[in-house]
Image (cartoon, rainbow, N blue to C red; front, side, top):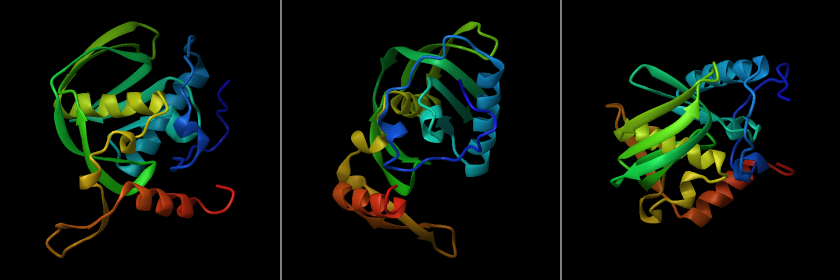
Amino acid sequence: MIDRTKRLTIVHYGHPALREKASPIRRITDDVKALVGRMIELMHGARGLGLAANQVGIPRRVAVVEFEGELTALIDPQIVSAKGGESAQEGCLSLPRLYGDVERPTRVVVRARDLSGKRVKLTAEGMLARAICHEMDHLNGKLFVDHVDESTLHWLVGTTEEGEPIVQPTTLDDAVKVLTAARGPGG
């Protein structure tokens, strides 16, 4: 059961739901549809490309991604094939301001259900494939830092007057300490 009255917020590093393997949805109810709608609003508000239910503290197999104006809700998704490989920078709404390069497939085929319960097959390439893989990792209790090229890990600490990013290199150990401290005592 998904509580429609509970306010959704994005949980941060250290929250147990981020490391939990999400359980299947099985039946698409009004509660599930409402959850997807609330996740989309939250993702838009946070200016993200995707959001998995684990990231709102609900370890269920639901994710939303939006790329180039196309919004996709994935219920009980599974990657059935992946091809190619490319390293590119990733960040995560659950690990604010932390970025690093992650190797991901350049093309994936995903099977899932849409909000009407219909089985769908989606072929995604490039950034959409990357976003789907990132969200699928969340549904499996993984984070981008589990795959990051640690030599590329950095904090975004600001921008110049010209809009260029100002970054500060970090190690995974130091980033974990900062993220854990940000959660405060008792998390």
